[in-house]
Each structure stands twice: as structure tokens, then as C-alpha cells.
Image (cartoon, rainbow, N blue to C red):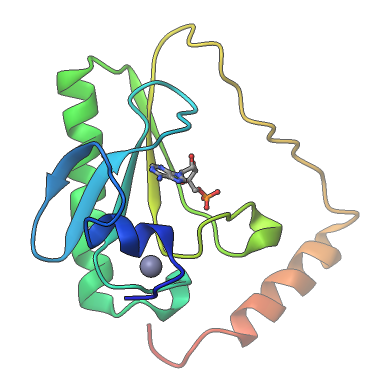
Length: 142
Ligand code: AMP
Ligand code: ZN
């Protein structure tokens, strides 16, 4: 546990939450600032951050629960669709530095739209150059 972390405090019961699901490793609870009402957070009970430092097995467990919550929102809330988001780093909009997945129910005409400003590459070479740099960062085996 990180004593400065609000999500660790929620896991420890030192701060309240509205629980949706819990098991030995994972907690899912309602986001107090929902993008769309029903917006749920899925977190590991251990303090871990960012995504790149999560052990494979725990990540697999988390994403299984993310899928379950998404299904539950579709069934229980009759959501028409789901967005999953997960931020790493302040520059990416992360406010709470304890790994969490946002599971956001979407409804026809819910009024929300993402600020998704697609911008073109200057040239195919520029795109290939960036792909090459990403490839150079891949481990030998994934
Ligand atoms: P992020 O910007 O990805 O770090 O998201 C953090 C999320 O945590 C935001 O959507 C907040 O509304 C939510 N949040 C912060 N404090 C609490 C809390 N005490 N209970 C539930 N959700 C919280
Ligand atoms: Zn924490």
C-alpha cells in the first residue's frame, strides 16, 4: 500500500467507495466524476503504476474483470456500447497514479463525444520512421 494513494486508501477501507465488484486481487467501484453515469473504475488491490510495470498475470486478471464489468453495464444498464480508457502519466491526463481502467457505458444520444482530433502524417516516410522507432523499443519476445 502507498499511504499517499487515494485508491490504496479505498482498498484499505480508509476512504469510502460504491463497490460494484471485488475479489482477492481486484476492486471495481463507481467513479465519483462520471463521464457518463455508471462509469466504473477497475483497479488492482496492490499499488502498481504505470501499466508497463504490471505483472502479466495480474494484468490478465484485470482485463478479464474489465470485460465482465463492460458486459454487466450492457446487461444491467442496457448500455448500447462501452468505452475503456486507461491513462499513464500526467501528460496523458492521469490524475490518480494507481493503475485503473475506466469502464464507461455509452448510450445512443448520450451527448458525449471524445476530443479525438486525428492529424495526418506529413508523409509515408514520417509514419514509417515512427513505426521503426516503436519497433526498436519492443523486447525480443512479447
Ligand atoms: P485518471 O484521470 O485516469 O487518473 O482518473 C482518475 C479518476 O478517479 C477520475 O475519473 C476521478 O473522478 C476518479 N476518482 C478520484 N477520486 C475518487 C474517489 N474517491 N472515488 C471514486 N472515484 C474517484
Ligand atoms: Zn495505490
